[in-house]
Length: 102
Length: 184
Image 1 (cartoon, each protein chain N blue to C red):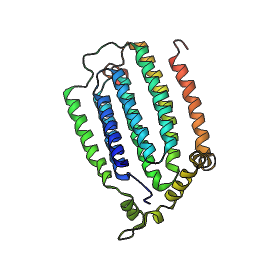
Image 2: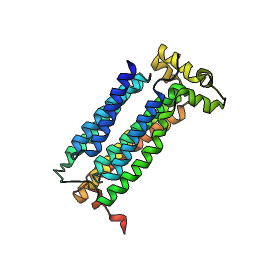
Image 3: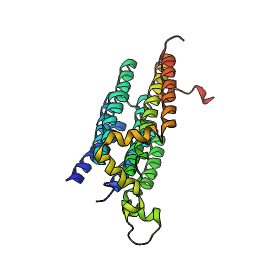
Image 4: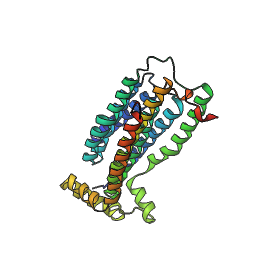
């Protein structure tokens, strides 16, 4: 029995999803949608880990756990920051958030 | 049969991701992202990681996306006409994303056999199971008992990262509470 199934298609799908996430981060100005695109990129990386874990053993699954934890923490803190910015500026448009631009 | 299911879910995932970045409303984006995450959970099951698929549904769909929806509804953004960047930024973004896609989709060509050939550096057709003994062993263990095959490395080999993760979660918890408070 082949030890890994769908390795190439999984890696290709993960590449497409990662690219979509990058495109979303570059295209959109809404900070919430930008965070969603970051989650999409993290999901694509998780798919790579799961696909390669079929060959390399259970370490890939462990990395997926850690990535999920970091993603959840990042979403919680990031959305709290967005809430604070919205309270301050009444907007989550990234074009309006230019305090550090000098 | 399985590959048909795989490609259906892969197409659903790509459609969900594309619609997520194209939808105007953040709620619609979150819904499309949810369909992507469900499709990815199904793909994890097809790849033999049933526990990861279940966790994907519980953590991402059940927790992270609900958090996104909560924030969208808290902010009460209203309808924006268009939140894409300007035309020059859009062109630059599409060029960057296109180059990245061309680079990364070369991974499509990878098969277990080719990966084994590159790792072992043996000409001809190498034995995949011999090149990656951990993979075959893990498949047998996973078929026997999924949770045990994960729990043992988590609390032995990966104990230190596991504990660091718990500290990270605590820090994120405190940080989120402090940032979201109206007056500190």
